[in-house]
Amino acid sequence: MVVNDTGIAAYYGGHDAYLELNGAEAMAGYGERRLALPTSDADRIAYLQEVVGSKPDNRSLQARLASLLAPPPEPAASGVEEPPAVEQAPVSQPLPLAPGPGMCE
Image (cartoon, rainbow, N blue to C red):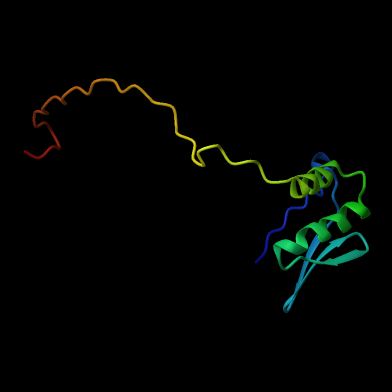
């Protein structure tokens, strides 16, 4: 079973879309238009450009495409960010428990 939420309700944007799986073929449907799903990372941008071209008013798709096209962020100077130091409170010794109902000695 495959669950595919495309946001078809008006509250979520009214995106009429579907996923079609037929043997080894995976297609996305947008109204009457069918597109083969990308099979590699390199194909994702071309796929998304085609989807945005068919739905130019969809800002969510435009934002996703922009994030894929943006250069990766610069790494920190040292390559690894050190977390800020946290001051530890002194640890108190636990009190011994006296055996009570339901407890083993």
